[in-house]
Image (cartoon, rainbow, N blue to C red; front, side, top):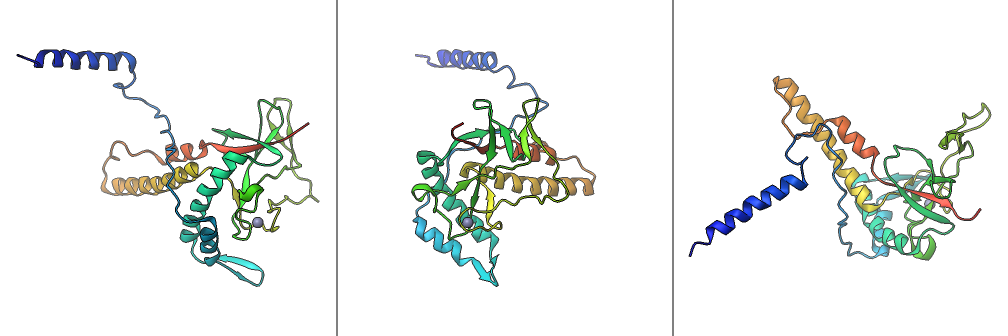
Length: 246
Ligand SMILES: [Zn+2]
């Protein structure tokens, strides 16, 4: 009995279906869409207490100033803490705010929330080990700064008023420890992981380009340009918070 023939017909049919449903797949695209962010975050075995003491180990206080002795270690433990804290944030939310993930917003501190027509403020958190997990229900301490020189303009977008001479730019300080130095935008762990990968890709792309230029050769196919990589970085989803109530 010959089983080959139906098998071959099946393959031809599969190929036909593939090109019918995916007409763009075999054409060369001029602009590459951003790859999807992997939602697989690493599993963290350590407890929050362990992580907190590990972060404290690389933070030294001297004359009221904080020094991070190993930024690499600090960042590695910070990511572990973020994975744990983010699980709590997703379950419990942020007291007094609605959360809205926004994409393609560049680096703005505020955007207009389409539903409530209020300004949604970029979420931040404090990585001082003494503040870690001191938010609602042992969760992340997520907060925003509602900048007074921002309002909604006639075009429906956030309008920033230039500060007057006697006005100082207001700093984004932590509501618990009052420090500015540990405050960073709050990004979801998968976004942090993707951003780190993009930073690596950027330096690799620059290295390959410099080498190709020095050798008078073309840049190998598949190496994205620094502009493409940086564009993806600014388009990563960000977390914004809209104040509750009227
Ligand atoms: Zn703090």
